[in-house]
Image 1 (tube, rainbow, N blue to C red):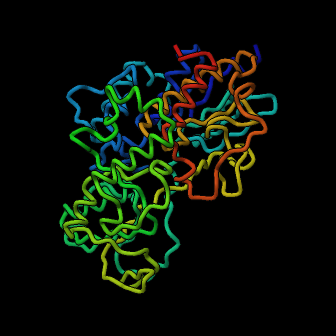
Image 2: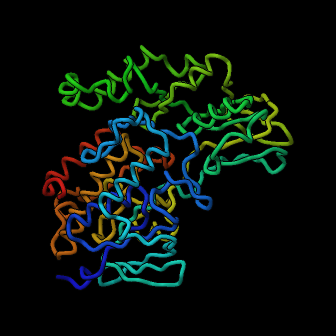
Length: 436
């Protein structure tokens, strides 16, 4: 057994990804130390005054049926789309059930992680300590660094903020609010602002697919369940997606029918908006769609079509840049020119087996997808720390390995559709089957 294997594995982060990874690593009999900069587990689902988290009105955008872990269902009395407090309660019960907290050190932040020549990693912490580990599991997520448009706004008299700082809408009452973006967060905040009594404008540059939360009386992700699932699960992903796209457009309408730009991509090519309220309120004239913002000055917001409007608050609902500040991504994670890790499946390094990532994806039904990732990570590290070749990186990983990052924004290469999860499950079976 290699010397490095007598040391524990460092899991960075005790959010959903870190908790799932820890559960699966422990099930393989591996020693684990989890470090979490926040004061409690739960990641973004537990809002923290220093590090933020989900906003007060946040609910799941996938139903509880497709979100819950297969062996740990959500309570029957939860609504179809649980709110963030219920999701956090679910995570707390999962954590207690598996005894994970005893493996977590809270209030400690990794400031640097450096690979050792003989294998393993040395992590430096904000308390000045340095600790050696057999392997590094990056589970810190991809919501560290807000992405804000390059729009001049130094002379703006109102408030400019990123959605990362947003929690409750009371301060928006009576204000003229421009929400920028057409993702799930931007749409939620636009509705929040409206209900708080604001005049709301939604500034949109690029079209997106919009899916209602319910169709034909069911959560939209449950339409193919039951007898139809046997058929739809056997269809090629492109055919299945095409059927769903036509059904949604037929029953719920197209984005352009509500004055939004037409999406230029197929359904699930990037994270869709799952929201029934934004089209409804646009159709009622409660939310006004406006062009992209070019400048903020005084009390005026200028748009690309030359028009202007008066505004008091501008909220960037424009997502995040992938950022791992404790790592030199280009040198240590095979990073590209934009600083994005080039990893197989967004998980495995092509040259180092002692570092893996979990959660560098934005996937449909993310909890269950992350759990399959966690099982793959556990299978991989069990082999590596026993001194054996990993069946994943030394058998199943294609070589030469060419990651498909593309040139789009981070949210595009991070998003994975159902075919990704199916591939993970196939690889898990090939690597030895489900974890214990």
